[in-house]
Image: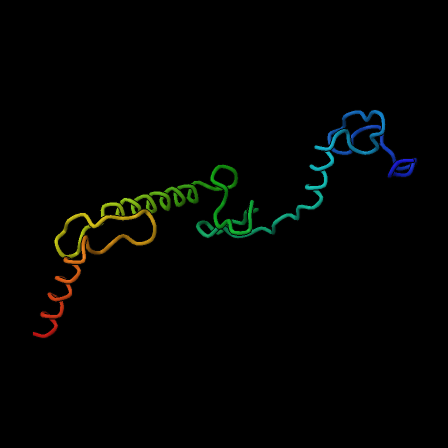
Length: 137
């Protein structure tokens, strides 16, 4: 006797519609069984408004803020997303090209966080003394 009662057994796979053979009672393979389980387990995300255009969209993950670029987004939203990408690229370029506040030499950037403000401790100390002298006068 199988897991399902005889009146509840199927002739075709419950997920893909393929024929069942041998001892298969509901799904034709383990992959179909797992896919059906995942589909039943997955809860649909509620619609969220796009931050850029305000139109509701179905997010693929909970932290998604914008419409899907090609699926649901209108032209205004697509252009706004492109502008955001360009702004992020410009900010990255500005970090890479950071200059020392004292001598205007390349300050360097490690690739994480803010870029350095000074190229060396010598420049940092000299800038501090310069600001302190300006404040005293």
